[in-house]
Structure formats: structure tokens, C-alpha cells
Image 1 (spheres, rainbow over the protein chains, first blue to last red):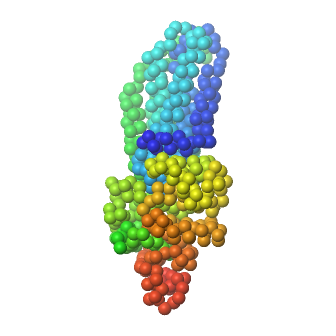
Image 2 (cartoon, rainbow over the protein chains, first blue to last red; image 1 turned 45 degrees about the vertical axis):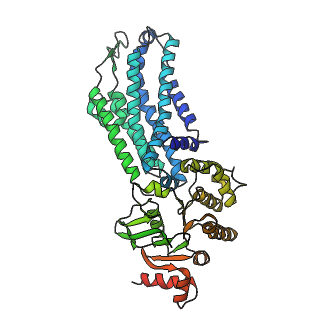
Image 3 (cartoon, chains in turn cyan, blue; image 1 turned 180 degrees about the vertical axis):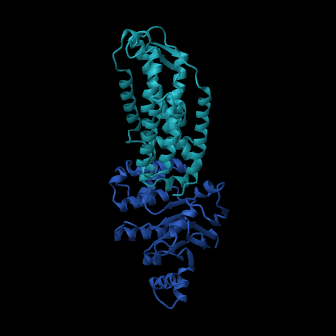
Length: 253
Length: 243
């Protein structure tokens, strides 16, 4: 496995995959953190981020997954390299090595994003200390749905030579997940798509906001965490991994 | 002489099409086995089955005296070098970088990279990105990748594709020298009949997935009244097509 990971690193030379991932993360951070910070925002800054950021993640994390997985797999398809490496290495290990390498880039971006968000909060002077337990939960609820989305993208990028298919599948999924977040009155909708789990696992809500009074009586509150659907998401990850690996191992080239 | 590759009733069906039909192939150690057949005869599918890139619908494959299956594949394939259809490469990397990846995976000495680049005469262009190579150069790189571990068995599918006449001649001489120099057994498929005629010790002629003839090349010349391989080939494959 170490040999395969080393090769993945060598293959990505001149592909600028990490650079592209970092660029997307910087754009995400600029979008998420830029704004007019009012007294209300400064006072409730830590909770406000926990409320707002899952929506931004629902847009950027699938995008990051599409780009990283597609670039990692496209180079194999373009040069017909599967014909070569599938003869040398075990098929299942190739699937795992690409998954580990690609997701470690995404995970690094997740951690960077998380750290910058907290540092930004301190620089802005948000009231109180960072609620670290809540922020760790937020990190967990970002990483696990992203992992589910990445397994999906990784598998279809490996199976389909035409990366336009994987791009459109990812974009359609992202839109479905995003729109489901705007329809909280139909909870089953967001629970039906892996892309909607950024919203399913959102545990901070904004209450008391009205169009007339706006933030006058508004407050953030921690809601019940949907552990059942978190467990279901982990089960989905396992099922997608097993099916994806089986499909790749059975692929004829 | 010991048989290094032996297939028994090897078949492959794609939906309603029987691409390879009960093929019995026997390749002797240290020989060059020319695999001939018209387009779509099942040559590439057969070679892919030998490399476990395609799963047979029926039949068995024994290589180095071991049955090829999911448990033995890595052990068997570690001793096989291959170049199937078009050459495989990472276009954004140089030839040396491409071979370095294969060298890590094959766990062979880094010095083999320069050696095989020298053999295929790419040592002067090894630092150029492969995307800027001509088809012939890519084909040479493909062969370098196949030779990298100096395997016991080399499977080459149309290795002269894209080469100029001088390159074809060079490739032919190189293949011809491999059994003697490195003790390799070579299976080479080609649509250029004259090329096989000049290279192979044994020959297998396949048409519509069936083996029409298998045996020493010289015996084929002796037993058939016709004189050149092209006529023999057309005679054999024509028979099958008319069936």
C-alpha cells in the first residue's frame, strides 16, 4: 500500500491537484468569512458560523471532491494506464490507494478550513471562547458527508472513462443536496441524498428572526443531533465503498 | 520442451458474440510465439485473458505451471511484461518518471530504468514529456515498461504499430534477441504476416475465436503446398469465414 501511495504522489507531479484544492478552499473561506460583522454577529459569531457554514460546505465540498477524484483518475484513463497497473498491483489495493490519497487532500483542506475559521473568529473578536466540542462535532459532520460524496465521485471517476459523466453526476447531486437544504419542511428529501447530509447534521438553528424585526429578537440554539442519520450515513459510506470496490475489481479493461 | 503458457477450452462471450471459442494455446519456454488472426478474431481478448484483464467465460489458463486465478494472479503476473493494444503512459510525465512509477510497483532495481531506456533507444529523450512523443516513441516506451523487470514471459500485442520501417526492423531484431539474451519467452501478435514469418518459432492462427493452426512455423511451411505465410493464413482464415 505504501508503494501505491508513493506512486500516487509521483503521478500527480505537474497536475497541481493540491494547488487546485487549496485554491478552492481559499475561495470557499473568502465567501464564507467575508461580510459585514454587526454587533449581533460579533456577539454570536461562534454559533453563527456553525449555523451558516454547513450550507457553504454543501456547495464547495462536493465541488472539491469532483475535481480531486476526476483529476486523479483521468490520468489513468487518458494514457490507458489501468491496462498496465492492474497487471502489476492488486485491483482492490489500487482502489484503496487512490481513495486514501485523494481523500487525504480533501481532509487536509477540511482541517485548514476549520483552523482558519477559528483563527478568524478570534481575530474578529467573537464573544467568549470557541465552543471546541461543538466545533469538533462540526468538523466531524463536515468530514463524514464529504467522505460519502468522495467515495461516490471516486468510484464513478474510476469506472467511467468520460469524466464529463462524473462531473454532471456530481453537479446534479450537489444541486439536489443544496435545494433539499432549502426545504426543511420535507426532511426526507435531504436525507435521501448524500449531498444533503451537511444540512441533516446541522445542529445549530436560528430562531426568532423575522422579516420586520430581523435580528432584534433572534438567537441561535443548539438542536438535537440526528445521530440515527449520522449512523445511516456511515452505513451508506461502507456500502458504497464495498460496492465501488467490487465494481472496480470486476471491471474489464 | 516445457510449456510456459497452456490454455484449455478458453472462451469469452460478450453478450451474444463468442469472441474466443474453446481456445487451446500452448507456448513453449524460450520460444517466440506468433499469434496471427484477422481483425476481430479474438487475439487481443485472448492476450487480455492471459493477463487477467478480462475474465474468461469458460476454460482454464496455466502459466509457469500454475493455474491463473485471483489467488495466484499477482505471483504469476509479476513475471510477465506486457504491451497490449496501444502503449500505456502518463502524458504529463517524462519517460523516466513513467518508468520510475512502474519500477516502484514492480520493486525492481532503479538501474533497470536506464537499461531499458537504452535498449529501446529512448535514453536521449528520457527527460521529455511523453505527451510530446510520436506514436512510435510511445510504443518504444511501452516496450521499455514491459521489459523493466526483465520478465520470464513477454506479451506484445501489435508492438510495431506506429513505427516507421526502420523502427519495425529494429523492433523485430530486438524481439528476436530477447529469448537468447534474457531467456524470455515472447508471445507476439501482429497483423503483419511477413513480420511474424521472420520472427516466430511457433505460430497460432486464430479466426472467429477458434484456433485454426498451432505449431512450429517451419512445419506449417513444409506441410502446406503454398509458399508464403500470407497465402497459408488466408487459406486457413478463409476456411473458417466460409463455415
